[in-house]
Length: 175
Image (cartoon, rainbow, N blue to C red; front, side, top):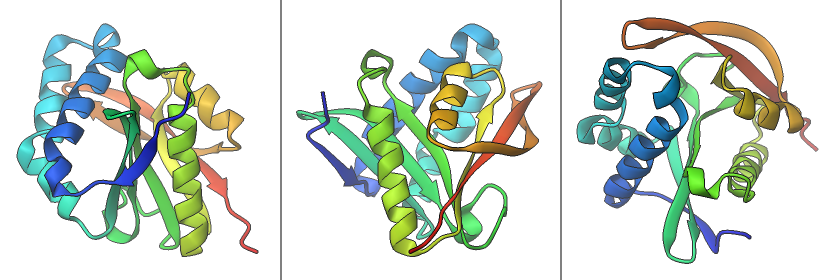
């Protein structure tokens, strides 16, 4: 099963991105975090104001995966000063790959990651990097399978809980 298309999002897709962000985040993390910490994070990260700022940032791009006409997931990438950390000026950060739970195991995440790889190669960046929670074993397996390696870690604050994100990167060899 493949989505019928992946297309670049604009600010007009705000509501779609917001709904998928909240649903996917809760599906993935609500059972292993307090409701208060989930609510705090969702309010800060997926508010209309925050997502509008991100969608309007020239150094951030969102790509939505559609299956038939249903939005089933999205990719958010950052370059330059939009990166959450500056690993390298010539790097691309995969900030989010969010896929609705009912579409897990259907290759949507892979298609979105492949889109990020194509964009990175087209733009001549040295590497793709991302942060993933050390307890998100499904995501860690996915990125490892795709050639990403852990190179560092940082603290990710979820409400009042400091958690550890593993920083992973994929070196790109430009032709």
